[in-house]
Image (cartoon, rainbow, N blue to C red; front, side, top):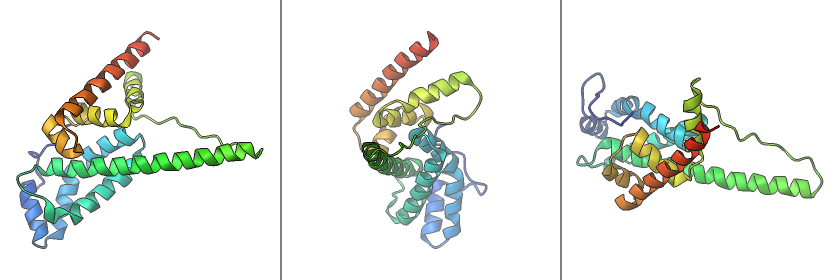
Length: 198
């Protein structure tokens, strides 16, 4: 599930070559990068946000931002890491926006209850792909992690990024990222141990 630069598009061009083509006016070449990385970015964003529609919005916004910022991309950085930093930022922005919206809706619901109106119920459950019950339990456990821990865990063990790539993508230091991954693993172990005892 790692972001790989080895699997090239049909014409065999490297990421850097495709970027150069886009920058000299071949705007259709950007689609090669979208095709190369969209599925991986969507998997991460879906696990990060817990909602496939939000994930699609975040990834689409990330590709738009990447296209707009392509002139600032430097060949010495892996394109996948550079793009992933943008995806992470879009997920964070969408999550923050959703959190503000939830607080607003909660305040409205509390106000409605105070006024004697009917409370609107919300179903917080998420759908999980596949029929594997154990996988669904793991997915649910990952969703309960604090956002920064979930982000670090998914980057390290789902995207298989090294700590240098993670640091570039998040702006956090390696030691902080290692601590986040450790805390995420400890929390998941505790949760899954409890599930296996059920």
